[in-house]
View 1 (tube, rainbow, N blue to C red):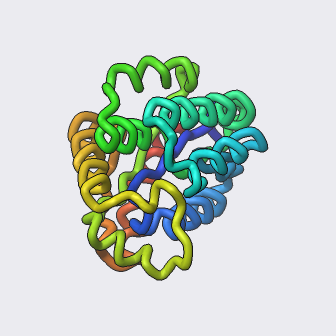
View 2: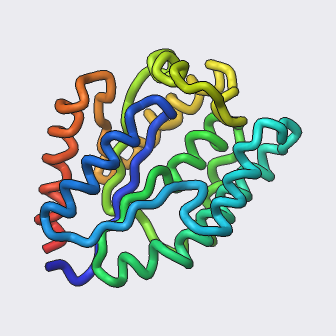
Length: 211
């Protein structure tokens, strides 16, 4: 068994099928004998969930983009401090639904905040903790939007127009090309089983690397 844990993050626009595959990753790693911690951003802690409620509240239409970015970073700092760092140190597998890449994609490319500013703020928040592997679920924003329409309600971010999501998508594309060793692009337009098979191949590689 590994001495240090594995940190896995999952990225993508809402409607990309992240939740289904996160459960697959969790079950697969547990079958391999690992202790798995599942968490999400923003949230994952009592304080983080309160921050999440503020960020996503549709009534907070006047929220400034910098405020939004700082709130995400604050929730992230709490999650690192309270949960992620200790779990990794204990040799556990941590699966996080979203991490810093979301801030780059949504607040950077989506909102137009300077990437260097986001980097500096989040360097403080994450305390040197970085994912071992990141799965980006690649699906055109229009397709993701169609999938989401089955949901009865939408939060403040989900209510953004398609132009915003196109910029977010472009941001993810740039990140995947910039960090190909860490970010693995997964074609999320395919069947669930096909997507899971792709993920399994990468999980086996990361497991072998950690042994």
